[in-house]
Length: 229
Image 1: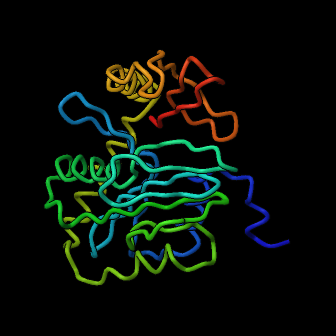
Image 2: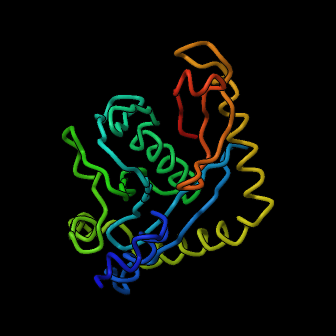
Image 3: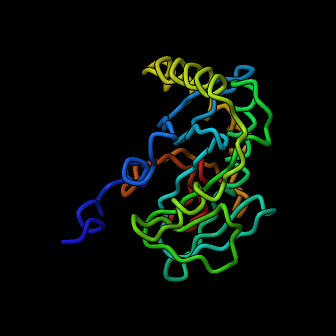
């Protein structure tokens, strides 16, 4: 049995943790599931990788079907057997993460690299930027993007300071921080309380397959509009 098949049932974030361990050497420090708060607004970042070549903010998506999107669109489209769903542009989502990291760590924003990884059985139907890749343990794209950044941007002292700060953020992200982040998300999306397709109320639901939270139309199944949180 192949290694891909062995961990096929893992969630997208667990797969990324595995590939971090498998491919990245001692020059890279990996922090998973970081919740930080800037100006009373919390941000959850799937993975932060620290190296002398800069910081990598990694956003993971577990999607199936056909994926359509462009760098500038506010929302992308997922199509499964003709059933279309909209979700937030992950590049825009990760841009907010990189800005929050820049402020938290007190470093220039251009020293932070944005990377989006799609796991799951999905196919890109539009051209994607180089920092949006299809996941796979041995396709080399994850490692290729990380190792393509060779300009030295951080000193060892800066790396040590950044790792200490991220460790503090990680240690502070206990159950209470997670609860605050959940409440923050609810408040942030309160303005999206109406479905743009039919005008019905949007309600918070959890995916049975991925466990992730999303907003769905209360008029389902007559209206199938959903929005990622």
